Image (cartoon, rainbow, N blue to C red; front, side, top):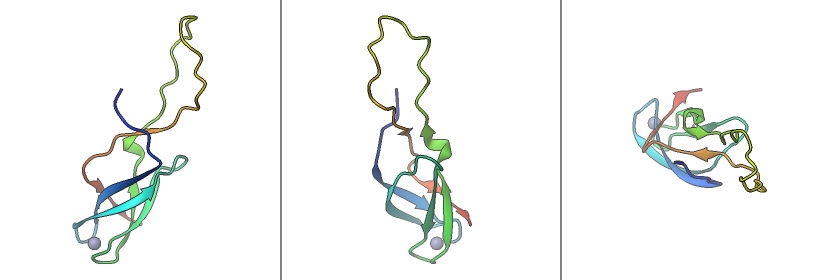
Length: 89
Ligand SMILES: [Zn+2]
């Protein structure tokens, strides 16, 4: 299983306007996986859509008696590219 569970993470974004890269430490949204970002170079505000990188917990296959009970609430896992593209808002 790939992916990681994060609460806060430092991500690198590519500005949709000036195409430069910048890093931000953000809290990851669970409900709507988009982040509002602002480029520190050109002040362009943008939206980073994180849904492609979200790995929803897979629904357990048919429960087997051998499986231990899953007592923990499944958390969203993420797998990010090196640089996340942004789009204009
Ligand atoms: Zn920019």
